[in-house]
Image 1 (tube, one colour):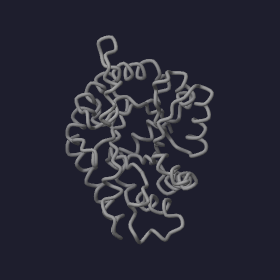
Image 2 (image 1 turned 90 degrees about the vertical axis):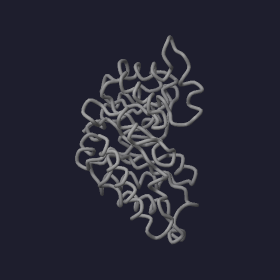
Image 3 (image 1 turned 60 degrees about the horizontal axis):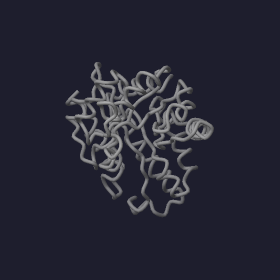
Length: 270
């Protein structure tokens, strides 16, 4: 099954457009986990198991694992998701982007070493930097378009022949790079009007939307501006608001409540 089909299937099965971002920060873990030798894996596994029936995807952020020398925990976590929650796809948030010969190795890393179903990419080196990912037709290539951070406008909003650069990126990927139907775009929840402009430019292509929760993106505006012709097409990502809803022994139950709350809020506006 292709990544896009897997996202659609999981979204329908769980009635959810929620993606839980897995950004482990050991200093924020509950104290009762601190003595565990495999604490990063254990924390993330518990979160996954507590929220899996409320999501359409999980999104581990590779830097949070690599900074702790926990790449092995990342690989085992993705394997656990696939084994324990089959049908829920995994997006590796790595934002890769490099020349073609190096990009081939990054594609191998994401899809073969870690077993991810999709990976986030920086398209600003051009198509040859993305081609090894585009060629994996069963995997997702999720391109940065209009990011949620305040500094994103430094370049993404620059005029490009009468339209902002992020829209040129969106149109190019949707119409020229998406021959295998495996592309998606990252558009931040913090820019709902721009999210609407991207949706109008790319049709029903999936959009990964970070920025709700801790970054303050408005769920109603995201759904209104970002949903596709079928009323879905969104992968709404929340990390810290779910992961760290509690730092006590009830952290898993608190994460589950927050994931369910976000799912239900999104569905209220669909």
